[in-house]
Image (cartoon, rainbow, N blue to C red; front, side, top):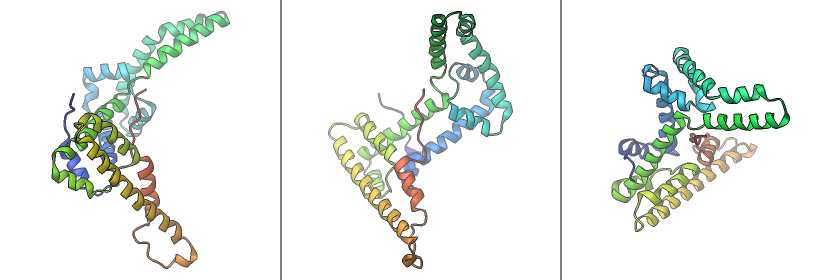
Length: 242
């Protein structure tokens, strides 16, 4: 099944001269998701039901707290905590009632199973993964359909290695068998070219700190260490839902 296309943000991204425009798009997606769950949506019964059912991973729960909007967090936590206590009431009682090592082990296993189920499906992680899939799909699709996009992508700085790998995977779904190999080759050539560029910049940065090079030009490599890390690890990676 084809995903909904995200042509406007992907086109904006490919023109941005970023080391990985998908990292930038996902950072924006995360900011939007945090603001959504701290805005008027917290008064929506449907949103509260979803929060009660799925909640948030530790990373995104802490980001909600750090946004300094305590009322919204308190409203969600009030009902989420009540639902959590309800769901865990049986295993809590089993733990309290354990009178032997065998009963304690069984109660612990029961609690662990229920707790693992509670931790599944952070709402923000899930929504961001959906958005990421659309960005992957759109990038591959546009490359296969639009010569102008193909040219723009070839002149870009490529992607972080994590999003490069994600694009390779999504290309199997987004492109026909006749087009997909060409995309894989072009994407890999682009990635290798830009990895070489970063490697050259990082190397010159290491050399600039030598006494004999202190007076030489930085050649635009002042931030090469940061760009190198971004390229290798990504500025923004989606945490898989638990």
